[in-house]
Length: 496
Image (cartoon, rainbow, N blue to C red; front, side, top):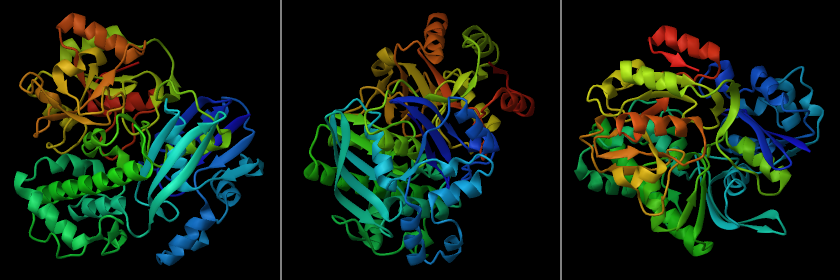
């Protein structure tokens, strides 16, 4: 039975097609509409999904009516005029598809996050932690998950609810330094490394000002409406970012400790938008031996989570290349030729990545050894010069070049930072604090793996700079038409 999982209506609309445990397709609406974080289901996305066969049922990632009760509580009265049912949402967003006539199941927002993680993991049982800005009401939840007779079972053992939210707090800090909340939190994370090392006392000040009860994760203020104006009025943006990051890591540590106490397991599944904070993720190994964060742990990934819940069993997880396909063999020879000649090249080949990070199929690649490369790539992408870039490296050689944090034997989806052992040799992929957001590539036969092998033979360098094929404020390249536009506007060769 083919299930269409859907996430839509708030931000980052996405769909996933699951059939008998196989993930046939998963894609983002923004890649089709060209509107960053598009909340509306795009017809092109649905058309791509329907190419994988007729749909038998729909699974929706949250319960709209329950979300409305929280919006009413929060004073978001304009939201009350929008549909209260999934059928109503689909009828409004997708006229002409008649999907609202199919059998529909909707699931709790945080449970969809949990299932996206657990049912794509290799674990038979796990502690599941979900931390995001907000679901219907939940902002933090801890679960015990296991398979019983092959079926996934979840037991929620603890939760915190609106307005007490680590995710909303981080978004409030994002806004406070002039960045866009629910969009540019990753920039705040990168900015944090530029703050003074002495900001530990400022993080303590923040905790005293914002946190009523850390054990219960109760905040003194509703940070959904922003930070109290006097808290950081005299701080630089960089110091604010660093203090916010340090406070966030402290609070996440408290949650992980609680999770271990309430649902002890060597295996951690971590989900929700806060799980994208790769700097904070380096502490997870202090609490758990084995860590799984699926490459799309935010709301878009919950389209997969809803489908997983409807299916009920473990999904077959191979990789994150699940989206729109640009057919043809991976252009290894052309990429290397362009790297040798011009040091920078775009690649748009195969199926697009499901998640916010390019992993080799919609990537801008560069030689990490040149001192000028980082500034050149930032200029191409229209990004601030302080922003860091990630290395993609052969997995078996990663520990020769990076000190991977405890619990992280590999990092196939750029989900943790590690200290680079030779920063002077690879200046393009090392941040101001000496760390890199590492992507490791196993011997999996993928195009990016074959490229790295050939690049290593050619140069004796086992890594490349890897960033997404887009510019700031735009979604990643999806199809060849997008790639041609990128090549023309930004004067970088994009090979397919």
